[in-house]
Image (cartoon, rainbow, N blue to C red; front, side, top):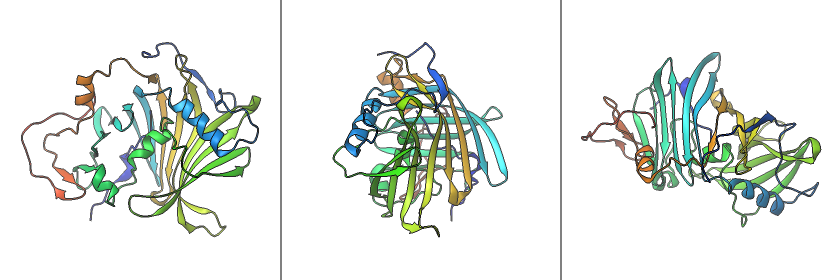
Length: 306
């Protein structure tokens, strides 16, 4: 059985010309809001407004991310960077005491992750085709949830959504099925802030077949937005501070995204091809989650994005 020390797992969370002037920075109570005019918006208006914000962003890049990860009584701080380009290009690395400890990435064909303290320390990878067929992941990482958590994933306007009132706002609820066949509820939490602004303050995934004693659905994972930033060039509103939690793993991750660049101009075709390609790490065997250990091959590239 594959077991992980999840203490250094860092699933992101996160992500015209590159914006070089400062973002708006502030807490969610005073931040700009989405363009929603109704005091009691329906699903169609919420989806349209959320998509209008997401469509301003094709890519984000940040070379300075502060990460505080806690599992149980153990905690560790990391520094990292990420690049995310729609629809599925993603790369994030993080260091502990100057040494690369995490490399997580994705392209349109596959995703991968390497964690230095994993047991065993494989470079794990899986094609999206195999993942859709029900491959189970050995740690709590859902590739598409990264773009949803950082607020750039678009919503399908043709899907049926429910609206549930909450204290101070509403939940936009989508019923779905995970690739492993598990019925889930995907929730986007919106809060009606001061001045009438509507802001996204959370993304939650619940187990639709499992309820707590109080009748609420059991939470699988959640991303709570505690601080927002607005790009002055595109007007896009994106998270600056996130708290990601996985209750079953007793895992909590605090993420602060500093100096976020929206639609950076340096994502050339050559850089994209290198950046979003699974690396080959020296002395690190690779493991296909659908088929088992890979046969070693020639060619070595270091971990980390450039």
